[in-house]
Length: 270
Length: 185
Length: 77
Ligand SMILES: [Zn+2]
Image (cartoon, rainbow over all chains, first blue to last red; front, side, top):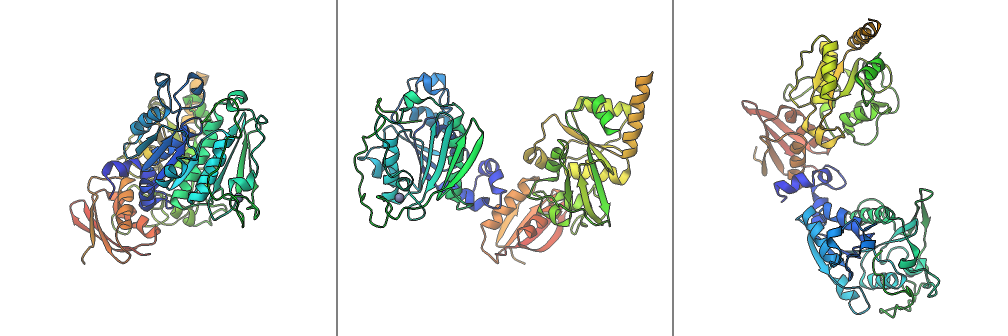
């Protein structure tokens, strides 16, 4: 049963035949893990909290830095030096008290990944380095959790959805990590501040569609966005039967070492 | 004529022509999706044109216009204001009008009321843009003012300082003439 | 006729008359009957219409007092 406040808060969802009261209840019962409370995680967390996703886990080891505020809209000047998970939790609770925010003030690594995922129905990746993305993709595949992938670079971003057992995985898309040193780290690359806003919001939309079971998720499709051209494209991506993770005879059956990129220090969130 | 009034009042949005077809076949291109009538009026004020036929009016996310605009008769309780059943289509936007809808601020209504030589208005905040501003003006052939309804305020894109006035084409012509005369003096 | 669920919408206006009756119908089983009481005249027409547009069966609509109506709807599918 909804409370009077919930009926008013979620009335615009309830009015949609595709959502209705049943869909809103699914959202309230859903548990989503957000990896990173940075540029991508900020809009995703805001919209998932506003939509009434009942449990939002936020995983981020960092504290808020002045250089984050150009794009990480969960945080404000008063939060400088605070753990990002605390700053995020405060904003999200203020937005919607229906949401239980669970703070994981840690990075995700091979030691904790499967434990972290265990309590959630769906994962949204807002991390910004290749090492973590491979780890997250492998862990979600092994744990059978849907993963909404997003990444940004300068003026360009991309989003896709990996559903274990359906469509390709991250390693079908990028079989080999790029050689260390070839990819500029986040500290060197620069990014248009609004870009994670667009990409993170698309990730939130995909997450909500998956939780509701409506529409056509970006499974087997890679959405790419170019802010300079203001152009969205979708490319078909196919499962590779020889894939080392999801192929017919996978060689990856447990989490391995992921120390191959992001040379200049750790940069866990976009 | 309505555009002269738009300039004179300094309106932000264009006046919206609403054509009510009774018995004539509906033009092609029924509105798609499930907007509200109030949404369509607002979008028409920004230059679009929509056709409501019996199928598209049933898809609207508000069921009031179907009744207010005369696509069907009430079954359980008489609800006013409304046009008698027999409407076959309603065209929102374009140049041909049975009723002109003006989206105005209260200050603009003040100036319009003076030009009209006064307005006797009746509203109750329900069935507002479809009933009070469209159906009632169509039926009585007299201008009316609507402060919109709660659903429209919540679901459509109207600002709190926007209200809707419906005028007959004859009133629009008369007011336009007055503006013209005033300019000559 | 006996209702399986009662919904008092007195004092409610659009769009909540619709939102709340839609929610109440979702919460009963197919074939069960919902009794809705409204005192907002447009709701007497538009609640039944919305229910029908969503595929349900309106069994009756009757005045039950000064400016009060009872709407009986059976949930279909
Ligand atoms: Zn694969």
